[in-house]
Amino acid sequence: PEAIGTPWVAAKPPPSAEGYPPSAEGYPSSEGYDPPPSNEGYYPGPASEGGPAPTLKGMGVPVASWTCNGNDDAGKPPYCSVKVPKSCAPFPFIASSCKGARKYFKPLIAERAVTCMHKLTPNAVCGAMTYECRDAAMRSACPDPQADLECQALVKKCPKTSLAQCRTYMNGLNAAGRAEVSKCMVTATGCGYGIYSCTEGLND
Image 1 (tube, one colour):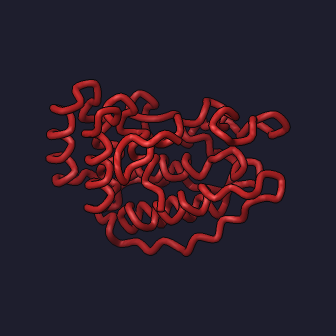
Image 2 (cartoon, one colour):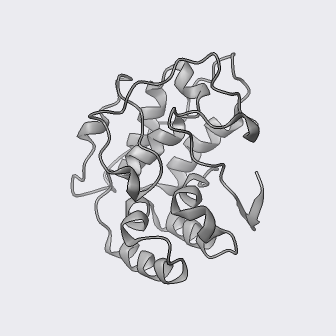
Image 3 (spheres, helix red, strand yellow):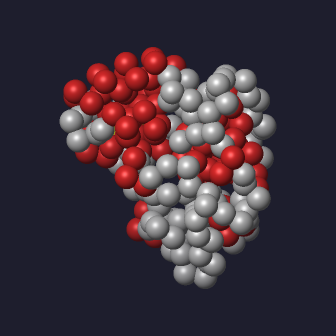
C-alpha cells in the first residue's frame, strides 16, 4: 500500500460487493472462491453511511443482534487466532487486522469483531472478510459524545465526510483509535480516502 503519512499507511480500497479485494492490491482474485452469502437481514445500517454492507449471513455471526447495549467498555475480546487456509497463506494482514481491533476498538466492539473473525469460513478469510467483521462491529457501537466532538472537527476539515459517516466509525473506537483516524484524515490524502479507509487502516 502507498504511504499517506507517518506513521500511517493508506488502507487498501474497500472490498468489492462480493467481499473480495481486487487482485491488483496483492491479494488473490475472487476466482475459485464461492461468493459469500447475501447480507439480507444482517446489515445494521445503510451502506451510504460508510463502506460496503457486511456480507456475513450464514456464518453463525449474530450481526443482526449487535446493537448498543449501553456500555461498549464492558467486553473482553478473545485472543487473535484466526486460521489462514493454506490456499491463501501467508496473509499477514489477517492477524494484523485482528490485533488492530483489539488495540483500537472499545472492548465490546473488539469482542464482536474478533469473535466474528473466528467464525469466518475459509473462503471468507481468504476473501478478506475480517474487515467486514470489523465494519459490522463498529456500526453497532453506542453514541459517544467525545467521538461526536472529534467528528465535528473532522467534518470541518473534510467537508465531503458527513457527521453520520464519521459517527458510524468513531463511536466504536477507543481514544487511541480515534486519534489515529483523526491523524489519517487530516493528511493531504486522508480526506480523499475517507473515514472508512482510515478506520480500515487501524491494524497492528
